[in-house]
Structures are given as structure tokens and as C-alpha cells.
Image 1 (cartoon, rainbow, N blue to C red):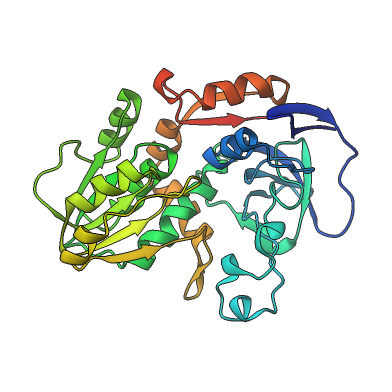
Image 2: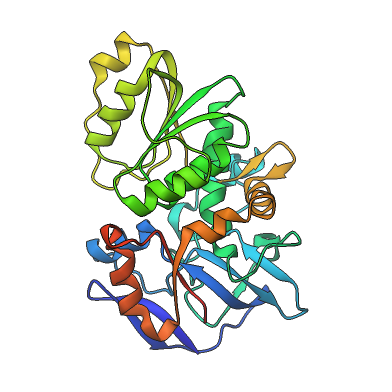
Length: 312
């Protein structure tokens, strides 16, 4: 079958054997290109596996599912406490990073990875369940309330997912985005675009020293600052202002469980309840054969890309 792998800093369409072994076979219907995929390629990570951790497809019995792309050990201290996103296996448990992912025609996953899709969610859109779950997890950790004024810095996929999830609880959500297509999507998801005053919850979805400085500046004294981005290059924190405002910094990684509910299941429900999420966020669809073109489009946000998806 065809699969997309990393070769010399570029995505390469490769012929690989059909997946075998224990688990559930899924015929891939959609897989998204994440900013993390772009970073891993650019940094030349020696990943010998098929890329893709934003995935949805159809099982052999015809069930449409999204995939929670983790295969944690299940018995370390973090897994036992339900925080399997922090499993001691680390990156090797992540599909598309430490084992084969979903930029392929088929994959075999542990049964625990299956996320049944609610009625109304198209499996060709459901690669968005994974990035939505990132926002679900972090925003739940931050303890959002209906009284919070929320500001979100960064208008990429995670920033727009954060808008969609924050608007489920709060009415006053402001998005600070760079590109017109991001701003239009943010507005249609219910965000304003011009910050006014200070905010109780500020979410950084851009992951740079500049975005953190901007986020800290938007915080009122005693506010929560949620780090929802991935800080590939590290950052310089404006520690003086953080201390003087007595900000509470909340780090968030991937998704897991909030009580009895998985973040991925909450994300799938959010997609069912708000069809605009898929309509606005998936801006490009390409076949696996166009892997190099798809990654080039995904890397050019200024040209109008938000989420680029493969539909094998």
C-alpha cells in the first residue's frame, strides 16, 4: 500500500507492506498534516515510520471512527492515574511518531484508540478530532467558566480549535490571528478580533517568545495562562510581568481523560454539535500521491491554508 514517510527533510510517498499484527484494521478516510509534522520534517527527525497522528477511517465492520493516536503501556504510575498522555513510554507510544501513523491507505491500531463518531460527523472530516481534543484537554485543565473573558493568541488549527471549544463555555472570546483566512474563520466560530482590556484566561497557541509576551500582556492580575502550543525552539518568558501579575501558568500536553470522559470523545461530540468546525478548518484536500504538494501548502499559512487533509 501507499504511505507517506520522512526522507531527507521531505515527505516521500512510499510503497510499504500492508499492516499486520494485533489490533483493529482501519481503512484511512482522512489524515491531517499537523504543525508538528512540518517541524519534524524540517528538523530532520530520523522517523522510520509512516507519518500522521490526525486520523480517521472505517473499520472492517464498517464503523466510522477517529483515532486517538496513543498506545500507552497502561501500567506505569501516570497511566494508572488516567494521565496516559504522560505515559513513561514517551514519544514511542505515539502513532505517526514512534510507530506507524495514518498517512497511509490502512493502519492497524489498538482497540483502545477507536473513537466512534457521532451521527452527523463525516469520517472524511474526522481527522480534526485529534487537534480538537488538544484544545478540550487544555481548556478543561484551565478551568474555564462562563464568566471568563478569554483571549487566544495564534490563529492556526489549534488556535481555531481553542476558539470553538472555549465558545462552548464562554461568550467573550477574542482571537489574535495573523492571516485573513484565520481571522474570518475565528469570527465565524464566534470570536472577536480586537482585544479590549485584560482577560481572565489567555491561551497561547503560537508557541514563540513573541506570542508569550503578547499573551502575558493580555492577562489581568491573577489570570491563568494556558500553554497550548508546542515550543519547538523554546522561549523567553517575561518572568517579571508573570510574577508581578501573579499569573498561573498551565502546561498542557495532548489529551487524556477528564473524569469518565476521554477528551477525544468530547471533541467528536463538539464536531457533531458545530458543523462549522470542519467546514472552516479543512481548507485543502489532496490524495496521498500529492504528498509533497500537500506539505508545501500546509507550510504556507499566508496563502490561506489552515488544515490540509489527505483523503486516500
